[in-house]
Image (cartoon, rainbow, N blue to C red):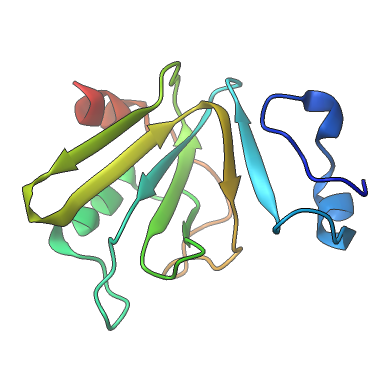
Length: 134
Protein backbone atom coordinates (compact mmCIF):
# COMPACT_ATOMS: atom_id res chain seq x y z
CA UNK A 1 0.00 0.00 0.00
CA UNK A 2 1.22 3.51 -0.72
CA UNK A 3 2.38 2.98 -4.29
CA UNK A 4 0.46 2.28 -7.49
CA UNK A 5 -0.01 -1.36 -8.45
CA UNK A 6 1.59 -2.95 -11.48
CA UNK A 7 -0.33 -5.45 -13.59
CA UNK A 8 2.81 -7.57 -13.85
CA UNK A 9 4.10 -7.42 -10.25
CA UNK A 10 2.00 -9.46 -7.81
CA UNK A 11 3.94 -7.99 -4.87
CA UNK A 12 2.32 -4.62 -5.65
CA UNK A 13 -1.22 -5.99 -5.48
CA UNK A 14 -3.45 -5.49 -2.49
CA UNK A 15 -6.67 -6.58 -0.89
CA UNK A 16 -9.87 -4.79 -1.80
CA UNK A 17 -10.02 -3.15 1.64
CA UNK A 18 -6.46 -1.82 1.43
CA UNK A 19 -6.95 -0.65 -2.15
CA UNK A 20 -10.07 1.33 -1.27
CA UNK A 21 -8.19 3.05 1.56
CA UNK A 22 -5.17 3.95 -0.58
CA UNK A 23 -4.66 7.29 -2.28
CA UNK A 24 -1.86 6.00 -4.54
CA UNK A 25 -2.37 5.55 -8.26
CA UNK A 26 -5.33 6.63 -10.36
CA UNK A 27 -8.12 4.70 -8.68
CA UNK A 28 -9.37 1.27 -7.85
CA UNK A 29 -8.73 -1.51 -10.32
CA UNK A 30 -8.56 -5.24 -10.82
CA UNK A 31 -5.55 -7.11 -12.17
CA UNK A 32 -6.28 -9.94 -14.58
CA UNK A 33 -3.56 -12.50 -13.96
CA UNK A 34 -4.49 -15.60 -15.92
CA UNK A 35 -6.38 -17.23 -13.07
CA UNK A 36 -9.53 -17.84 -15.11
CA UNK A 37 -11.23 -14.47 -14.65
CA UNK A 38 -11.74 -12.52 -17.87
CA UNK A 39 -13.05 -9.10 -18.78
CA UNK A 40 -14.88 -7.99 -21.89
CA UNK A 41 -14.31 -4.26 -22.31
CA UNK A 42 -17.13 -2.86 -24.43
CA UNK A 43 -16.07 0.59 -25.67
CA UNK A 44 -18.71 3.21 -26.52
CA UNK A 45 -21.41 0.62 -25.76
CA UNK A 46 -23.98 2.97 -24.22
CA UNK A 47 -26.32 5.48 -25.83
CA UNK A 48 -26.73 9.01 -24.48
CA UNK A 49 -29.57 7.81 -22.23
CA UNK A 50 -27.40 5.03 -20.76
CA UNK A 51 -29.00 2.09 -22.51
CA UNK A 52 -26.84 -0.44 -24.35
CA UNK A 53 -26.43 -0.14 -28.10
CA UNK A 54 -27.86 -3.15 -29.99
CA UNK A 55 -24.50 -4.90 -30.42
CA UNK A 56 -23.71 -4.44 -26.72
CA UNK A 57 -27.17 -5.62 -25.67
CA UNK A 58 -26.57 -8.86 -27.58
CA UNK A 59 -23.25 -9.42 -25.81
CA UNK A 60 -24.91 -8.77 -22.44
CA UNK A 61 -27.68 -11.23 -23.29
CA UNK A 62 -25.14 -13.90 -24.18
CA UNK A 63 -23.03 -13.19 -21.08
CA UNK A 64 -25.97 -13.88 -18.81
CA UNK A 65 -26.03 -13.06 -15.13
CA UNK A 66 -22.48 -11.92 -14.40
CA UNK A 67 -20.87 -8.85 -12.86
CA UNK A 68 -21.08 -5.95 -15.30
CA UNK A 69 -20.23 -2.35 -14.54
CA UNK A 70 -20.12 0.99 -16.29
CA UNK A 71 -16.55 1.83 -17.27
CA UNK A 72 -14.79 4.98 -16.01
CA UNK A 73 -15.64 6.85 -19.23
CA UNK A 74 -19.35 6.40 -18.53
CA UNK A 75 -19.79 5.28 -22.15
CA UNK A 76 -18.61 1.69 -21.94
CA UNK A 77 -19.12 -1.50 -19.98
CA UNK A 78 -16.87 -4.06 -18.31
CA UNK A 79 -18.30 -7.58 -18.33
CA UNK A 80 -16.45 -9.94 -15.96
CA UNK A 81 -16.74 -13.70 -15.87
CA UNK A 82 -14.90 -17.00 -15.95
CA UNK A 83 -13.05 -17.85 -19.15
CA UNK A 84 -9.58 -18.95 -20.17
CA UNK A 85 -8.16 -16.02 -22.13
CA UNK A 86 -4.44 -16.35 -22.72
CA UNK A 87 -4.07 -13.71 -25.43
CA UNK A 88 -5.91 -10.40 -25.25
CA UNK A 89 -7.75 -9.26 -28.33
CA UNK A 90 -9.31 -6.12 -29.76
CA UNK A 91 -12.29 -6.72 -31.99
CA UNK A 92 -13.69 -3.94 -34.17
CA UNK A 93 -16.64 -4.29 -36.51
CA UNK A 94 -18.85 -1.90 -38.43
CA UNK A 95 -21.48 0.06 -36.58
CA UNK A 96 -19.19 1.14 -33.75
CA UNK A 97 -18.73 -2.40 -32.40
CA UNK A 98 -15.63 -2.29 -30.18
CA UNK A 99 -14.80 -5.14 -27.79
CA UNK A 100 -11.57 -5.96 -26.03
CA UNK A 101 -11.14 -9.39 -24.44
CA UNK A 102 -8.59 -9.81 -21.66
CA UNK A 103 -7.64 -12.48 -19.13
CA UNK A 104 -3.99 -11.89 -18.26
CA UNK A 105 -1.52 -9.06 -17.75
CA UNK A 106 -4.10 -6.29 -17.64
CA UNK A 107 -5.18 -3.74 -15.09
CA UNK A 108 -8.86 -2.86 -15.44
CA UNK A 109 -9.92 0.43 -13.84
CA UNK A 110 -13.07 -0.21 -11.81
CA UNK A 111 -16.00 2.02 -10.93
CA UNK A 112 -18.14 -0.30 -8.82
CA UNK A 113 -21.17 1.12 -10.66
CA UNK A 114 -23.08 -2.04 -11.48
CA UNK A 115 -24.96 -1.87 -14.74
CA UNK A 116 -28.73 -2.27 -14.52
CA UNK A 117 -28.66 -4.31 -11.31
CA UNK A 118 -26.03 -6.80 -12.50
CA UNK A 119 -25.16 -9.43 -9.89
CA UNK A 120 -21.99 -9.27 -7.81
CA UNK A 121 -21.09 -12.83 -8.86
CA UNK A 122 -19.34 -14.14 -11.95
CA UNK A 123 -20.73 -16.52 -14.55
CA UNK A 124 -18.96 -18.76 -17.05
CA UNK A 125 -18.56 -16.65 -20.20
CA UNK A 126 -16.30 -19.14 -22.00
CA UNK A 127 -18.74 -19.80 -24.84
CA UNK A 128 -19.18 -16.07 -25.45
CA UNK A 129 -15.42 -15.47 -25.42
CA UNK A 130 -14.97 -18.34 -27.86
CA UNK A 131 -17.59 -16.88 -30.18
CA UNK A 132 -16.11 -13.36 -30.00
CA UNK A 133 -12.56 -14.50 -30.67
CA UNK A 134 -13.31 -17.12 -33.35
